[in-house]
Image 1 (tube, one colour):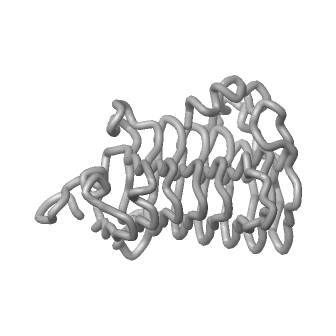
Image 2 (cartoon, helix red, strand yellow):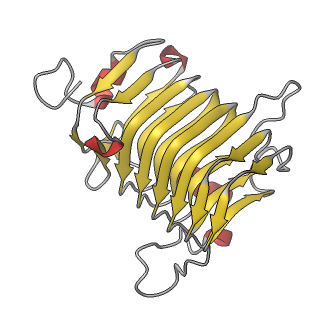
Image 3 (cartoon, rainbow, N blue to C red):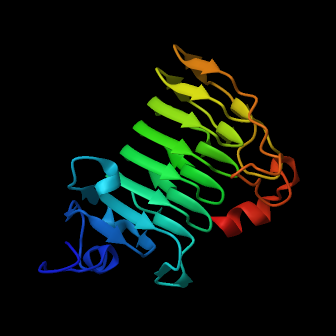
Length: 250
C-alpha cells in the first residue's frame, strides 16, 4: 500500500482487507492515522515498512484518526497472535507507538518510537514475543514495556534485545512481567534505566523469572521535571498512575 497509485492508500484499509498470514508492504511516506488490528482473523499478519530506514515510513500522531475516532496508538494489535510490525517509525501519538495485547507471540523489529505520550513499544497480557533492533525516546513513561504476563506451566520466553532507550522517564518498565530476557541493549539518559516491578492493581503479580544481562546502563539521571524538559510524565507522575488510567491509554 502507498499514498498514491496502490491498491490501498491507508494502512487501516489494507488491514481491513487482510486475513491470516497476510503481508502488508507499506511504501515510504507519512501516514497520519492510527491503525487497529483486531481479532484472530488477522493472526500472523505482517505489516512491514519498505523504506531503507524506519523513518521512511512515518506514522504521525498529530491530528491522526483511527477507526474509533482520535488515534491513541500508531498500531494496536488486539487479540492477534504472532503479529509482526517491522521497519516503521511512530511519533506524537496520544498514548503509545506500537502496542499489542492479549496475544500469543509477536515480533516488533526495526521500529523507532519518539515522543508518544506514554510508551514506545508496549506488550500487555501476551505469552511470548520479541522486541528487537528498535529505539525509543521522549516518552512520558517508558520506551519499552512488557507487563501482565500470564503464568504458564511451560513458559514461553519474551525476549528484548538490541534495543536503545534514551531521554524517557524510564528506559524499560514492566509490571508483573515473567519469563523475560533483556540483553544486548543500551539504556542511557533516562530518568531511570530499567524498572521491572510488581504492582498490585495489574493482573498476574508478581514479576518473576526474568534475566537482565549484557546491557549498557548508564547516565540515567535525566531530570524530566525541569522546565526545559521536552518530556512530561504521564498522569501526574509514574507512581500516580492507576490501572484504569493505564488501560484507558492503551
